[in-house]
Image (cartoon, rainbow, N blue to C red; front, side, top):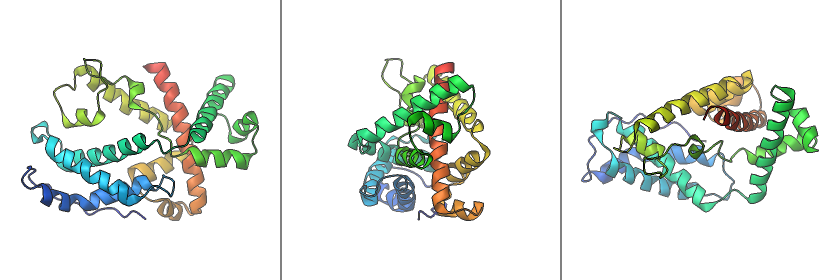
Amino acid sequence: MASKPQVVEEIEITTENREEVIIKYSPMIKYVANRIAMRLPPHIEVDDLISVGVLGLMDAITKYDSSRGAKFKTYAEFRVRGAILDELRSMDWVPRSIRQKASQVDKVVQGLQAKLRRQPEDEEVAKEMGLSLDQFHETLNETKSIPIFSLEDLGIAKESGDQQSLLDCLAGKADADPQTQVRLVELKEIIAKAIDALPEKERLMVSLYYYEELTMKEIGAVLDITESRVSQIHSKAVYRLRTKLKAIIAEEL
C-alpha cells in the first residue's frame, strides 16, 4: 500500500545540490510510482518506475525556474509522474485486445447516450454488447488502466504546431502562449463538468482516490464496502469519465 510521503520543506534548487535534492524527494518518487503501479498489471515492476521517476526528478532540477512562482515540489511531482507515464506509453504495455475492448465500450455507451438521452445503465450497455452483467464488469476492470483521455484532444500546441507539454506549461516556459493558457483553463472546466455528471458514489470515489489520495483499501474502510466493490466502482467511474470527456471535448473544442 502506498503511504503518503512526509511533507518536504522547500530547499534551494541548484545543479550543485542535485544529490541532496534526490535524497530529500525520494519518498515522493516512491509514492508516485506506487500510486501508478496500483493500476498496472503485476508484470510491471515498481522499482523500474522508481528509476524512471528519479530521471524525471533530475529533469525537474535542471528545468525548474523559481521566478515563475511555482513551488519546486509541485513541479517535481508533475515531472516525476510525467516521466513514468511517458515510459509506460513507450512500452505500450496495454495489449491491443484491451484497447479494442475499451474502444468498443466507449462506442456502445456513446451510442446509447445519443439514443436514450441519458447515461445508460450497466445492464443496458451489457445487453447491447451481448455480455452478461458480470462479463461487462470484468471488461471494465480490464480496461480501467487505459488513460482516460489525451491532452492532444484539447489541441494544446505551440505556435510552431508542435504539441505543447502540460509540464512545460506548468514550468512557465516562454512558449506557453495565451492560447495554451486558455486551453488549460478549459481543461479544468471540462474535467470538473465530467466529474459533476458522475453518479454520487462514483463522484465520491474520484474525490477519495484522486484528490484525497486514499488507497482502495482505505476507501473500502471509509465507505464500509469490500475492496473488490471499491475496485468495481472505480472501474465504472473511469469508463464513464472517459466517454463523458470525449463527448464534452467533441462539443466544446
